[in-house]
Length: 405
Image (cartoon, rainbow, N blue to C red; front, top):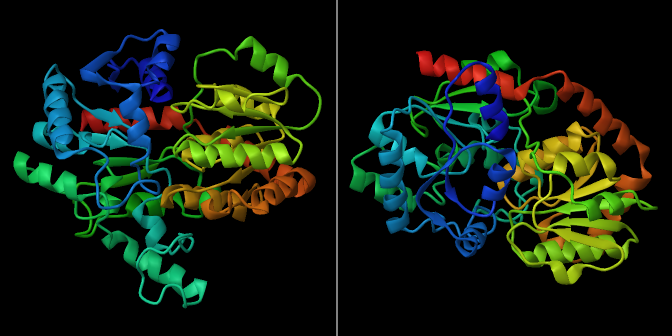
């Protein structure tokens, strides 16, 4: 959001930053930008519980927010938008799907990354890592499971029930599918066609079926990842200057057990390790070869490590590739699985299933990335592709076009 905000400001747009609170407010403070807290503000404890409820981590029969929270957040956002907001741009603040419908304000999203309908319709999603309910899934060949997954994913309704109950209360259109949960009126694809494999003309020509909201449009913006305006702590600087290969473990959208297992696997391989803890207290992992910080500017860490171990969200994948750093991905949800799959297909990553984190598979994948120079070469090729695109600028132009429509 800060990257998009900066590009909008460069174009003379008036931009208001709003948040419901949580641990990343410190990043806004460090950026020196004014921001408003909507409602009462989210505690760090609630933020940690939220992480445990997201797709791929929490059960699919809930909506990440309680019904009361959805209605409360929507009411607070509606009141805030009444100050003169003409376009709302958001990441994973999904109650905005409701509040923008109540106010009639267009919504721009970028958090779907490349997990958008044209990808399904081109059959590009990999077969799921865990069973998703496809008949005879465990016994079918993976190629058939993949084909069935791509053709059926648009009909999945997981995580939408609470939103649809709230939509009925608010007398606005509901969400016909999980895929529609990820889409705004304008959804920006934060990738490059060379990696995704779909031409820009095909992406922009897409029109929604009845499985999506009819207003939805999609277009490429290009890479948008955080360049957090916070310095590296001095002790991290010293650590990164130390001898020997170094890994960066930044798996922020999961519970602490997965992070701990990943750190143990990497340390067992003999690597010096920097860990991003975010909402989890992982300080007990620290020793002479392991450093833990709650929030780190990954764009400053990634270029100085030999390998990254990440879940595979667009932000972390793009930061790694934009730094020319190969990675091991542990995808926890479908969007992350696609991102890691694309990077692996291009030769810049290795994938490890979440179920295998505590097995030798993770250490083996890290070893392969470190020892096979083709991974480094592929990451550098993708770095060049991404350097040629101004993602925040393209996003800002698209947002301003929508505002003027």
